[in-house]
Figure 1 (tube, protein in one colour):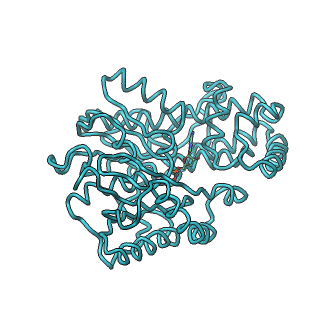
Figure 2 (cartoon, helix red, strand yellow):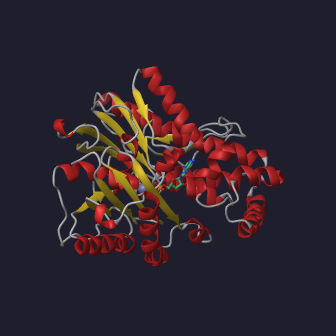
Figure 3 (cartoon, protein in one colour):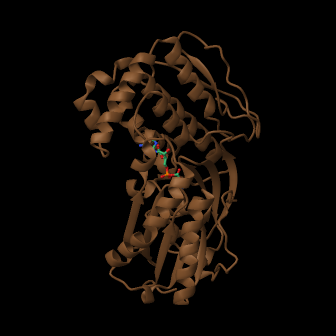
Length: 406
Ligand code: KG4
Ligand code: ZN
């Protein structure tokens, strides 16, 4: 592999059609993302059939835009990397079919990349050093996973790290990002909910409502405790407050139910419906309306009780992610922590993980904000170790919606 070598990365696992050109030394020459966010916003979640159709529409222009921005020609590429899974079958298929055809037509190698490994490389490509073992939290709309990552090939170096992964924890129900999105939806906020919750939480008291996570047994789904612990405190199912043995799993479906129950018992329904209607109209007129601007323009829509509920939810979820991640890091003797995926853009998460890592004398690294959510630069970056090891995909490559890592 020459430092000047070029990989075209293609990503289409969910609702972003993305293409990027990355050099072997980690330099990103182009990173184009066509988001379908506004398309799915009316449904409050990704509609698989619509996503596939939109990928079909976007894939050619997105790849062309990436090549043009990078200022290179297809003949200059050394390999084409594509997301194999996990993700939506029809959505993955669009990227894979296109990448296969392009690789075959150009006579270039094709590299299959696990989307979750891509998220991890979104951090490694900008981290100044990589001394393992590392504990990686991948936390997005579809995933909440903890991995122990170790250098698999000591000779592969920093620019083409090949890691070995062991899955040491995961959600037994909803992903953390999914919980952010579902709670935002039930409170009548915009889609995706994470950025709305993040921005609004900054204006409220995170200790107004206490949400507790109950111990869960590994691979078992528990029902949430219907009895508030005291006052306004509400018990939810989830990972234990005190780590029991080596259980580093998560559960986020209970806190969503607890929030719904809170809005019902506190008579918030009318306010929520008024907010939903008013915001839907505002977002229709201006689809890129940002949460902070909405709060400034329509302060009456965001009453303090709702803001406090949002801040309390975020405080609890981030606290649970933090507790499980650092407990696992300690248990496995990790030298550092990396956090990636859409939820790693959350400002409270970044602040509290940074404080906790400093307290424990550990490194913590995050991707740049642009690399936190789905993109193809991370797919190309994850492909470098495989390129160096000549791990190429053959004609038999298919979409693998449930692809596992570790
Ligand atoms: O990684 P990503 O783009 O797609 C998946 O692979 O799922 O992550 C999208 C998720 C959504 O659930 C979104 O609400 C969440 O990341 N998200 C956030 C923030 N920005 C995006 N969650 C909390 N705070 C944020 N600032
Ligand atoms: Zn993702």
